[in-house]
Length: 112
Image 1 (tube, rainbow, N blue to C red):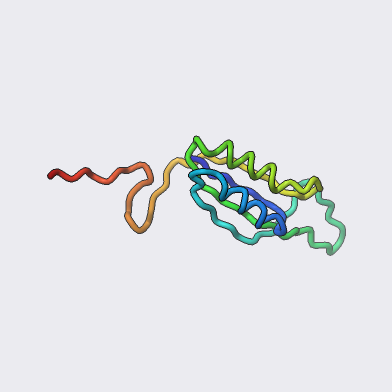
Image 2: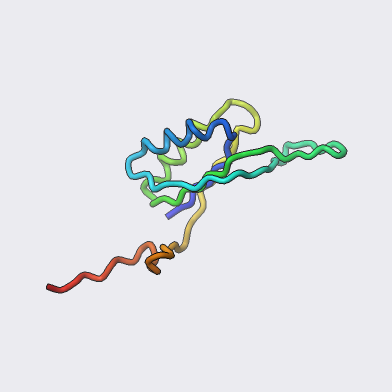
């Protein structure tokens, strides 16, 4: 399992969401507002360099990582500086709070 984390322009969120929802088996995503800047930003005086972005977080099985990554790279691209960034991060463990189970645990089979 991997986390795919993307920082995109806010006005691209609808387009990106639509494209991701077209992926068979898409596992869902979280979206939050954030601000940031990269190393190319020049700070001059009292200027605040933070630029508003949307952060998208997707936790996906390995077999969906490439298609999700490629979809984000393609649909979020504005062809302008500051279009965003996409990262793929290893996830060592996950669980569902409401069931108390690890993602990889299976329910016990019942005997009849």
